[in-house]
Length: 447
Image (spheres, helix red, strand yellow):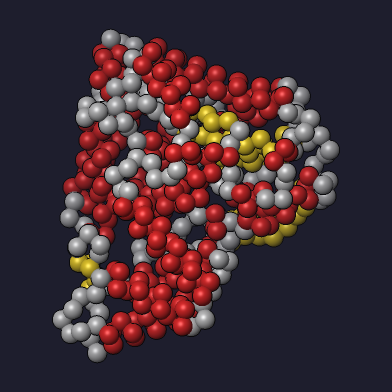
């Protein structure tokens, strides 16, 4: 019976075999259908390994696909058909995304905000920043401060439009949701919208859904010990929906408290109750995830979606990827506010993207309004602050098959930032800018 020590990835590279990858994949599938039994996942993994070692001929290195076939077999034969279905669906979705790897969008074209994108492109052309070349020319002419003002003005027009639409529905609304993928600018946008609505006489009550995270030990993690907070299954979604429904009904609700230092959720930390004219405000990655507010009628909800819809082409004629903007934003924010090494953000980003593609981007069409949070002037600031980091990561991960995703992203962003004229002086950026949320100096940080 050969002992399995290596496995062949889909790209043909050979890496060390670890049972943790199988256990985490099984546990992740269980979590997707409401299960939280890590011990069972480990037991099933042992069965997979036994079959794998028995059925693998001497001298043969198994492939990822062969191992996944055995996982499906073990799940079904051991009475875990529901988990097997989730595992199979996850596997099929991953395969579909790999087939469309070179396509910018992998979702139905009906879920792409074309109208907003065309408006953003028109704005970029009008202001001469639809290409990196045009951006560099404006910087060379000393127009960086002017560009900052123009971009901030465009963003604030979006904020005004949101406030106007909410105001028109103020008599029926019970819930305002600010949603969007990681580092899309939810914190600043939520604060700005709340301030203006409060000035108009609306009473907003914030519900922090981060307090509904499951205990850390119940989260899936990978072989590097990296926990997955990005999936909606990391939150007790049904309880969030129940509490929102009870609050709208005027009931008192015991709100839990999640202690990020200990990784545990403490029950009944705070009692919350709202008045008949109060409106609940939620800022969440998964605010548009249908199950989170399933019991609340649509006419009582205003749903806002954020995305940095930057319309700018590089020297090769390719558009700057929004996900790369958000990756850099999160690196800077995590370094400033959470003392995280930016490298850690890079290696974690595959979780972020996987969750976005499955649980966030498919729901953007449910939004009542989309805000473009992309700022053309942010690239020059990133070029100054982050280019050296990406240069280092490209070299570090070039030949590391376990960090292939990190290498691809680092190489792409490095190529992008080398084209941009760096700007060291960020003093023209106002204190209430979205960008301050990530580079520091926001007037909202102490709030």
